Length: 389
Image 1: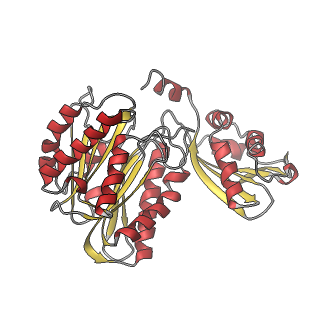
Image 2: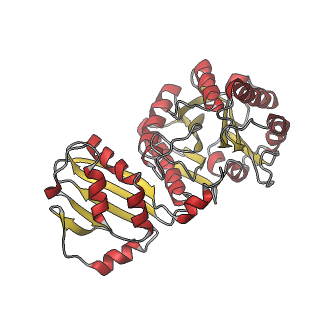
């Protein structure tokens, strides 16, 4: 049920013709009655901003944080398409609004896929009445599948809002270019909790900061990143802190699924810098390691090469004293005071053979800490990203 588990929402996914493969490529999430509800979004900060992002941001501004639907296509990003691309995004919203009986500004739009190629708008506009007609409370799986590109599986989440009876459901796509300030990703979340747009916006920003914004499988930031949440209010008011926690958990679950499906990856790596002089220093150090091809290759090779970690952090421009540095793999300390120490090598090797790795570096300077979710770098990643795929 995921994105339609919250009362008051319907969804659908169809093939309209964007993808030559025949895979699902057009998705819709909407309120069941077509009326706008509280909504919020967080977008990419890439200045090469895609037309759908500009359009959705403008619509949320015009409605003061309300929306009735999100229309999404995969297979083409509608990015680097100039004025015609913006017109196409607006046309998608207008056609969806006609099908649902709402205003065009009440519709948000997302696209994902190849950049710099004009959107095949005719097949999309022809498909919108079809996907609108197919919408139902049982359409969540198809909607989630229809936003996938290089994903090998759909990403869905469902979290209860404490004991209130309200829920947060969500769907997402993302398997590459997962970098700070979101990723090559789209996510749509819904809740039946009653909440004002300003509160919802603050909750979403906080949730993204601790989930999608700590996901880093590559150093590339996309043009289309979008996270949207709609709140129907059908379950009535709930404690705001409980809704915020549920929203954060749903985002974290979706981010974790993205990390597990990163292009070509064989490892999901939780890497933590602790003992830094500040949280900002810890974040800078952790991100330096997460973007390092050398570190990523060592994880692929199942090599607990802690020297690479220390070297990268030492070049991050943060407070650093090599004689205080220690490192752990799977909780097993392999280095202390800047040098290797005796440890259970078999236990470390067993940890490195696992799918999920937990690696840490303690700088021994303070209480600053930050954790990033990342992956290894493999031959399959190169294969996936050769030739503009």
